[in-house]
Length: 112
Length: 115
Image (cartoon, rainbow over all chains, first blue to last red; front, side, top):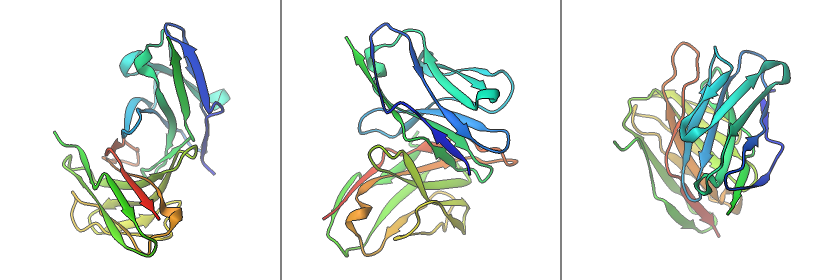
């Protein structure tokens, strides 16, 4: 069965430090992978997506993610975190029926 | 540029009451979805629709119904509300072509409490 695992429930980083959020997926075919961000009380906003091609994907707000088929991973990275990046981040895999399967999310806190 | 619009944003229901969450999109997307979000559980798919007149169950459909009479609208009906339906509900839409899932665009959510 398709699934997405985000091993870290909550991560705290200092402002200016680098960030990596982990995501592992289980999907039989070529995966369509997404990262979304949710600020408190808001809907979800797409950060980036991977469909095919270059395995390093650039997104908005300075985020990037790398698809590693051998590790079934799609980790999200940012070189220098800003206080405004504090939010919850969701990894998702797209199914052929069109809907997405989401991980349980990683909450990011940023220390000043 | 409205995108996906959900109403109401907040609602409190008593056990056994019924209500409809409204969702409309103005992007001419063919696919629409209803998810519920519970703390620490991510988003679970309730129902989805691939076009007007066509709907299908998702992962957690029990206690809900949907209809899709137009491309733009996808209301979610809660019959006989139960405390287990206390959640935040998100409507989303996407354009799906050639079997490739597209980006989902989300509404701002509807927070429902059942007491």
